[in-house]
Amino acid sequence: MHRRILAPSVLAASLLLAIPASATDFTPGAPGIGDPYYPSSGNGGYDVSHYDLRLKYQPATDLLEGTATILATTTQNLSRFNLDFGLAVSEVRVNGTKAKYVKTGTQELEITPAAPLAKGKSVSVVVKYAGKPSELSIDGYTAWHRTPDGGVAAQEPDSAVWWFPSNDHPLDKATYDVSVLVPDGTQAISNGTLQSQSSKLGWTRYNWRSNKPQASYLATLAIGKFDITTDTTANGLPVINAYSKDLGDNDGAARASIERTKEVAEWLSDVFGPYPFNSVGGYVPNVTTGFALETQTRPYYSPRQFANGANVSVVVHELAHQWYGDSVSVNGWKDIWNNEGFARYAQWLWSEKEGEGTAQELADYVYAQHPADDPFWKVKPGDPGPDNQFDLAVYDRGGLALQALRNAVGDETFFTILKGWPAAHQYGNAKVGDFVQYAEKVSGKPLAGLFDTWLYQPVKPAAPAAKKAKLTAGSAVAQPKSWKKIAATNEIHGHR
Ligand SMILES: [Zn+2]
Image (tube, rainbow, N blue to C red; front, top):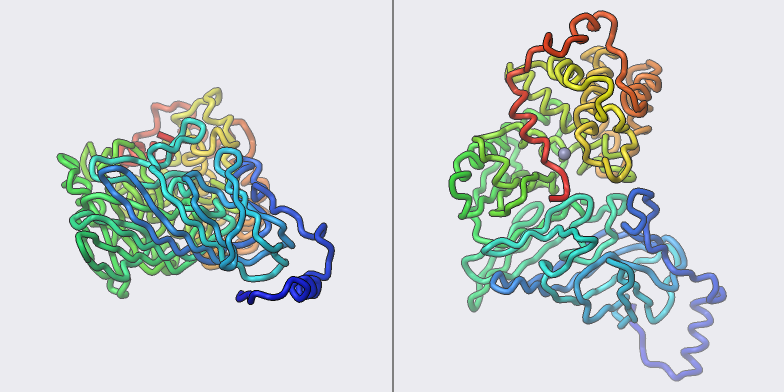
């Protein structure tokens, strides 16, 4: 929008013409998007289509300076609106005009534009900011991992507030351009493809692009000294991996796992359908955490994942999320089974393919491991609650639910469902109930009872009669060969 300087009377008249409704029709956007698990996550009143992040980072001091340009469309008449952000802000402009802003709560940036915003209009928001992400702690929790040579933003369900302002909830996905200026000799890693890289006066700029809708928690930034490897798949998809130069004894095992990315992505494409994004890869920063995360196109792996040798199973898990979690995202965080049940089941399918135990054998083993009075059965994978969002039951009982589905509909229909679902909801959001309906539609069978038993009842489901004798004594079920490697990935998500 371009406003000319007008005489006051003319300005008043044009405002009256532009805004015929009374000012009371314009109300503040909600400070949360409406997710009962995380009431302050995301915001109401607008929908973001693109983030352009122009950043400068100094590894020696952890100072991050940024200009975020956010393109959005209003979904209501807005008198003001919120972004989610934790660092100090120095200026906000809305449609090019300076706006008032105030930080409220733990992570809310409340913005009042000079003129109210009408529903259904394009809006640009520019936020200038600076701060040390390592100094930001929210409820004792941080998503910023400071390393000896830089820092990394990767966590679930929140990480964006440590490095850019956003509508921080998977319901509002957008495309990203992330441009990072770092001292020469330091590398900056983010999602998607590396569009260009250039050096000038001692600083190097990395321009990354993620050109398909991406949830804010799946955006990642890693700055440090990395060895970046590049390759392409048979289909021409760029493969970009990055390894910290300080992985020490874990370096070989990390590379021996993540260099299988191309092969794993190819196999997953056979199971889940075409790979949904413009690039694939993974990165291992020199962090002290233990988890891995499915950051879009480029999963994050902690070095500790490889402390006992290579583990391709964790690569299978994080790449499976590119379909189940990243392309098709949760509608609300209660739908976490749509992500974790399937990523776990992909590990079982990989085991089956490698001849290290079938999914059925793994399911039998999980079932036998947990007696009826084990609290494992109290967690409902279909709605685990925020405290149990990443409980083992979401993964393992989540996998049992899929094995029960496979047994109920048969292999052909089961794999048709696994492949059809990511296409049916590509780049969107879906609920657990949507999957149940989809499975019923494809199979032509009533399945609500089956999913209720495996996802929602806080008791150990009865084993099918034929299996009862075998499963009553846990000792009768042999441990599948792949079990230990899969179990070693059980800390892949979690706040640590
Ligand atoms: Zn996962």
